[in-house]
Length: 373
Image (cartoon, rainbow, N blue to C red; front, side, top):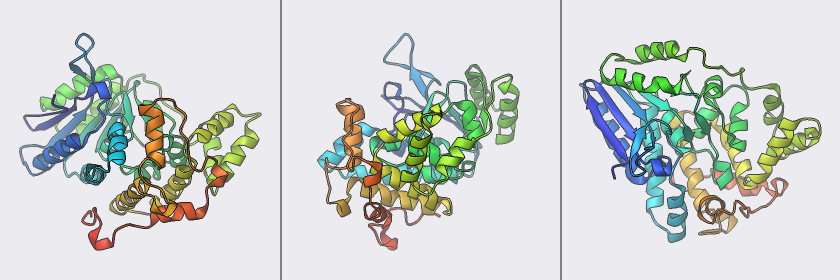
């Protein structure tokens, strides 16, 4: 089955992610198809605008799909698990080519419109966040949940999360908590929230040339929003007070101290306690470094980080004995939801365990993303 459906309608390039039984999780083949098509349209003067959506399982035909309903749940984590255990070099290609795709979208010279309906997580966020117009709905479930599988918020996550208001980026990156469409707008991670019922009309009007540019799409979204609820401004005082602290142990101590009287603090402490302690530390360092980095430099840093996640030689680990393989095992393979993290406690992570993640395994001239501008 074709998992990326592309067509040109007049001056509009239209892309549908069509792997609904896997929530449109990205494979290497899908990344390559997306990249090749976007490069073709970038250099095609007859294409003036590009629209991207996901799809859901067809209500009456389980083998088919229908548009909207789910955007993209991320990268294919089962592939990560299998490839890591097998030593498959395609794993290296996956991340290099995925990050190149993310950079291409952020730097795309033509307006890209992305319909972030339903699940928008991980690699789906990487594809969506560089678009010119990011449209959420009341069904949007957005998150960067990587610390829960022993990884960090990659695909440019350090770049776009670190640019959220205040310390909201740290909160979303460390907890992996899900936000809705209105909250995504308040966080600066969506440009508009519209009723999901308005999406087919928006898509049809882009295809028919009635919405030929970003300004016209934005105007229609503003009209379509209607009485859709809005979210309070982010971040709130609790997020700022806790996630602006110097390090993860200090955050956890403050949450635990407040837990008896503050249900939010209790819930947040419980969430952090279930994440990979090592990757919480790595992620916080990533976010804080990324705040002062341009996109290309931040993606190069992420490429270094992901190599170390699968090959943490400084920890004397390899193969199955790494956080991300264990995290995916617990979530998607054995599904016992009890990852055996190493170290097991936040306060047991030493600076010497974290710092080498930020040393590039490649000299600058040989880095896989050396030519990104």
